[in-house]
Image 1: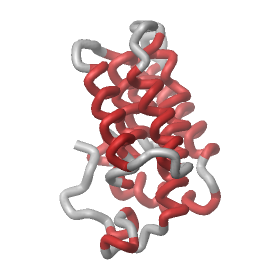
Image 2 (image 1 turned 90 degrees about the vertical axis):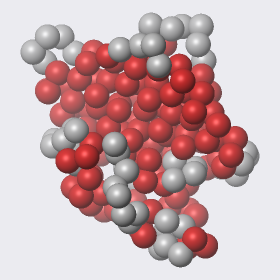
Image 3 (image 1 turned 135 degrees about the horizontal axis):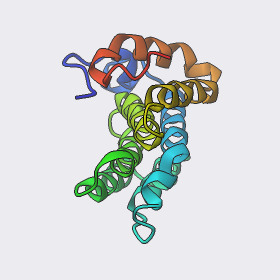
Image 4 (image 1 turned 90 degrees about the horizontal axis):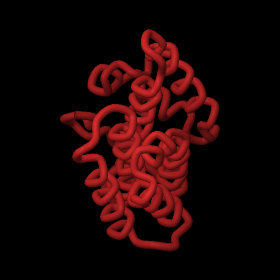
Length: 171
C-alpha cells in the first residue's frame, strides 16, 4: 500500500478541492517517469519484447505535456503493472515503477509509488549484501532529479509516507 488512507490536499488538484496546481502535477509525473526510467533496464533485460512499461513512461510524459488524456496515461499504467504479474524481484519492481509513473496523471500521490518501486528494483538487482546501499544510492539519485518547484513537497511526502512505502526513503 503506497497511498495514505486520507488524501493529502497538496496532491489533489485545485479544481478538485486541493491545492495542487496543474504545472506541479505535471512536474510530479515527469519526475516519476524519470525515476521509473532509471531502472527500466531491470525489466527490459528480463522481457526485451514487452514494451508496456516503456510505453507507460512515455505516456506519463505525454500526459504531462498535454499530448494525451489522463485516461490514456492511466490505462498505460495498468498495462505496465500487468507486465509485472508473473515476475519477481527487480524486473517486477521496475514494471510497477513504470505503471505508477503513468497513473500519476490520475492520482498525483502515485509519484512516490514510482520512486519507491524504483528503489526496490535497485535493491533487488544489487549483488548479495549490497541491496541497502544500492537503495540509498537510488534514493539520493532520485532526489537529485527533483525539480525545485516540487522538491519540498516530495521530500515532505517521503517523510510522511515512508512507513507505508517500505521505509525506502531512509537515505
